[in-house]
Length: 247
Length: 284
Ligand SMILES: Nc1ncnc2c1ncn2[C@@H]1O[C@H](COP(=O)(O)OP(=O)(O)OP(=O)(O)O)[C@@H](O)[C@H]1O
Ligand SMILES: [Mg+2]
Image (cartoon, rainbow over all chains, first blue to last red; front, side, top):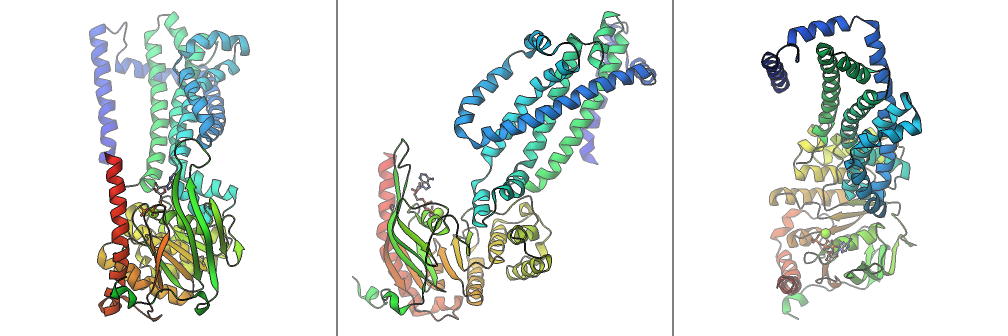
């Protein structure tokens, strides 16, 4: 149980800090804990809120699926081929260091307002890290595993599914975890810029109306979701890593 | 040549032996010959015949090309020049009937001990009952029965190596190539494992090719010992031990044991010194 102590401590500390900031800044600019929670509770009983959640959720789902699909595929190509990785990795890293918001007008031009633009923005954030982590995992694969498989005269597909895949599984889950949180970020920013629905839009809308409590409530909801998913994936990852780790 | 070395028979002519299991002729291996950078002549030329059912050990200074030689025999790397054959056919890719235990730990960390050992059998499509039978036997043989549900990460280096040996054995290879399999073990365990290896060799009638750093191990286990020169490694001497097939670790007290070891050391001392000198040269 001691392993739950740090997250719980951090959560409590965050709440205290939040309440403190609220006192200092005044509850009209930063709503207090109780006020926000009460608001969140009421908000969660409205159907329109869940429509926004569904809207964002759908976009995030598509974004992470596409990021995984292309990220893993590209990562495999990069990981297997030294020449490809020498050329493509600097390009990917450079692209990734661009402030991607500046590309948003371009994305809007390409996809128009709506789901596909949000998804594209999510993929822009999630794809590159997944790809780089996967490529790295394959490059770090211990050659002796492949040699062992060769000596057993395994077929190509057998090597892939019974040796390579299990060997890099912890990294794949790790890439999924990181890619997911970045995809969520990408989709929400997308919604803030150009959308009429979704949680990102709801937050920006509330800002326009000067409804600080609503912004805080949405923020809390998103944080709790993101942290839970992250925690879950981290648990899976460490369960696998626990037996995979080398001493 | 000293009196001592004359006391031991030089490898006799091939006709005195069983049929050939594997043979190398004029095998060399040069790394980076085609690409840019400096080419490394790692091995050879090597001429070597392994006879069916014999226990052949290779000793040689560090970096002389022992693992490279094993790779060629296993079909994992192609010789730069020369030919390699297993059971009369040219080695092209890993031949059927060859098993390898590598120098580094090759146990799969994502599988339990028993699943590691069963891995090759399952992939080869053996029936569950047969897999179970062979795995049980190998686990018992290697002293791993109590650890069958454990993951490699929970085992010591020596035990992981035993997992790898068991994983290779269950496939019943006709030629077993072992690269320093006991490197991670303490001296006493090494002796016991050596006995196990002898027992195994007698039971299976397999041909064994063992690379080792330990002169004692080579002297006690082998029918023949190939002594290799410094890189590029060639076999500078083949020593015939003449041990009976039912030997065990107690032969270390045999007088011949000492003379075999001394003979190996006589050759190796010079080669090892060459390695040291060339390394010193590089450092300056
Ligand atoms: N892939 C490679 N590319 C270039 N050089 C290599 C490669 N593999 C091995 N070598 C070189 O070939 C030589 C022989 O290597 P090898 O691993 O066969 O030696 P070894 O006798 O097994 O050494 P050890 O006793 O340390 O295990 C070494 O000098 C090594 O640096
Ligand atoms: Mg070696």
